[in-house]
Image 1 (cartoon, helix red, strand yellow):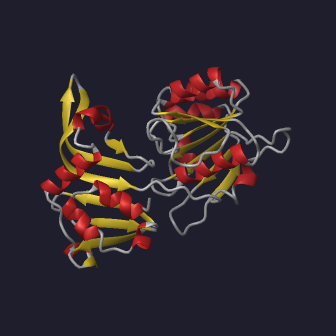
Image 2 (cartoon, one colour):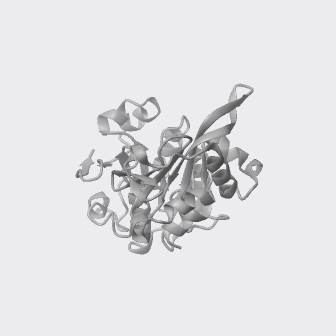
Image 3 (cartoon, one colour):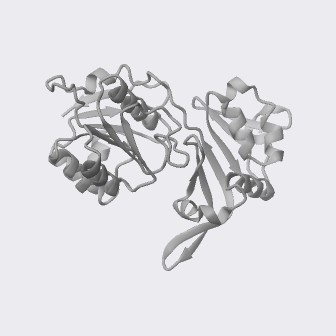
Length: 304
């Protein structure tokens, strides 16, 4: 299904009427659709911003401004008219669509016993498009391999990137190449359903024929589970940083299993200061670091 068809099937009829004027090929490079109550309807593509109005693309200041009804109807479509069934995802601040597309949600937080229970009413949505780009890791892939091992295992590698710079897309392609090209058994903990884009537990994105994917499971618990049950050569996770993640990473490393992971950040020194990750740097767990930049800026691979 084309990206345009996916988007139009989930937004309100009013928004779909305006968005359908854009060419189908334009949507194939789209990264985000921002829908905010009484704010311009905006599309992001390759780092550029486009307003959407009655005549198609317009300047943001003259673009259509969605109403509360547009948001409400869009949420109803996304939840398949059962918002209660998505209460747990709402508590996390996002809903994952088939194909791994993620809908970020903001609005009025409902607090219960000191914790966020849900978000109602909802005042803004950010539909982020998940897209597999096969071969995007080709330049980096040889640089993270440990040629001293018989199986050509990867070094423990950390991909560092600001939001929206393609770290999950890169991780997905590395997983696929390790699985299909090197014949390694890969265990993936896909806590937010973004790597595999699972629907009913089945990955919609190509993550390789030798990859076992654990969808919707917290990273720390998932890494231990895969280590005990699936005998992986490599474990891959997205967005390290939780309080229990560092302990799980150490367990993986001590078991002789290699790890590929991502983390939000702007460079090695930035990540080194994060309390939950500092211990991993101090112990030299990661041997390779891939630092991604904004679109148009070159990334870098470092060794430790």
